[in-house]
Amino acid sequence: MSYTLTRQEAAIILNISTRSVDRYIKSWKIRAKKEWRIVLLNEEDVENIKIWDNKKIELNQVIITPEEQKIQEKELEEKQKVAITKNQENKILDNIYEDLKTEIQKKDAKIERLSLQLWKMEEIVKNSISMIEYKKSQFLIEEKANSIKWELEKEKFEKEKLKMELSEKSKLNIILSIIVVILLIIALLIWWISL
Image (cartoon, rainbow, N blue to C red):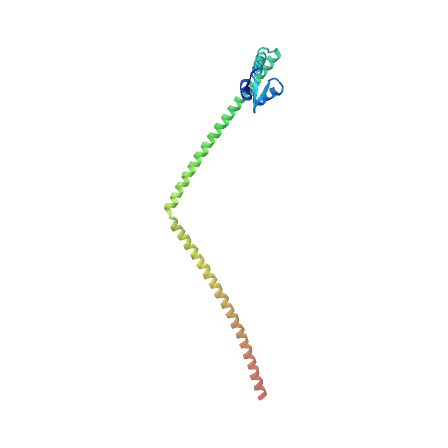
């Protein structure tokens, strides 16, 4: 008995994973022995499994019952129907894609026209009034408006001041008038008493 194959080599020969090789070892389908840390497999067991698997494949390929053939034909028809519907879906998607592409091209053209118009308008504005002059005129207008506001505030203050002065003068006039009346009354009383 020759134990010469590693697990990886057996997996490559059998075209399976190393986990599947481990399952074969556990089920005693492949004999194995451990040398140091390496697990070595029996080469004859691996070859027998390979031959047995090939025979199973051949048997499956050769023997097809009429029922299996009908099932395979139905599956083939289903696959063809799916392929046809996929082709129809692809055509619909292609049509939608072309429509969207055309729409995007129209919108791009519109955006390009609007951008050109905007650029032309900006050029007209730049050429008609320079930005510095525009800002300067805006500043002067604001400055004039502020000075007018200040003048109005000053006029209101002066008006209020004059009102207060007028109010004080009218109070003083009333007081003087009362004093004059009182003096006249006193003078009349003195004159009347002296008579």
